[in-house]
Image (cartoon, rainbow, N blue to C red; front, side):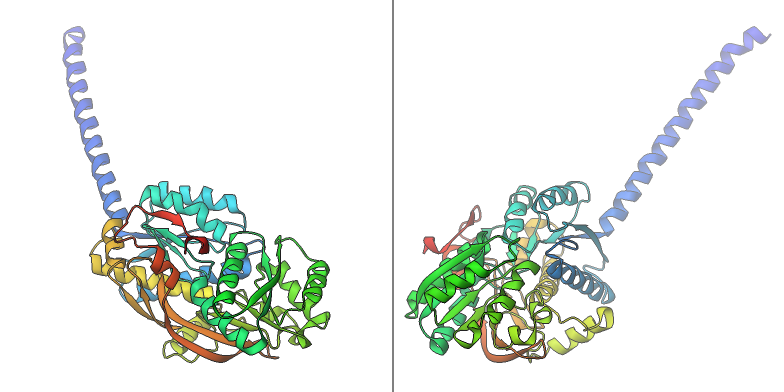
Length: 420
């Protein structure tokens, strides 16, 4: 009897086993589907900033601004009715980390948009990757200008916006002879070309220049060169904590009494807080945002910032740039009705505007740069700035001239003044 029943038992067990397996497989498939739906309900915002290392004086506030903007959007219903989720990496002020984490955050984390980078070298490391993967990328820092790429959007000021107003103002204020102190990478070297360009346009002359590594701490050789050149003013573009030391050594050498000093990036990392009042007083800077400007949306922005982080440390321009970038992208997604990259990029190219803390900013369709206000300020003895002059709705003239991504969507170049 046992021998006769065993085959039937094995057959029934086998059939039941197959049925159970099919049920389990179906459940697994449904669970994957549910997981996929949940994943699709999360709009992932990618963030790579320098949270540690020598450039964290910028990166920390860039990250804070991103989280503040995301929280603000989420508190107001999110985007397309969905909440935003931040996926964040610390580049540790190392260029190689930007390449590594950009690949990771796109391929593994499946982000919908990327906000990342401070230095131009970090931007250039990431641009080919976001282009290949067709991910909208926002670079939110003042820079030397000329980046032209379908997937890249710039919310900081370009050199053609800052230099065009600053160099003209400085030549009228101090005289025509200019000495350049700048970091030895593309931000410094290309910015120097712009200084020379606008010097010639407004009757000035570059009488000397020095390009220095970010690791330099002794500026005696540079100061000696400046003393020998006898300029009317120095265009100083210090980047990072070490190069801020140039400003102290410049003042200690007694040069502030003999010549002016102007900058497009002084204050962008709160250098005015760490330098002495003697060194900081009188330094003139031009940027797209300073905490002390009088704009309708600046006070609400500062109130949100103070509630989240306090105002013990002034808000830098890159923070406002990131805040604007996140909100501009969110508006574009709402216009597109989807997070699909092509649709969002098309919406961004429709000329979207946003009322930011620095005034109304408008995305230029062809160049992917913002038309925005530029402010000239002068450092005071209380580690702050006094506004000297406001230039409203300054267009990124160079970028608008050389970069037309509507007519030429396959363009992927970094234009320089030599392309004029």
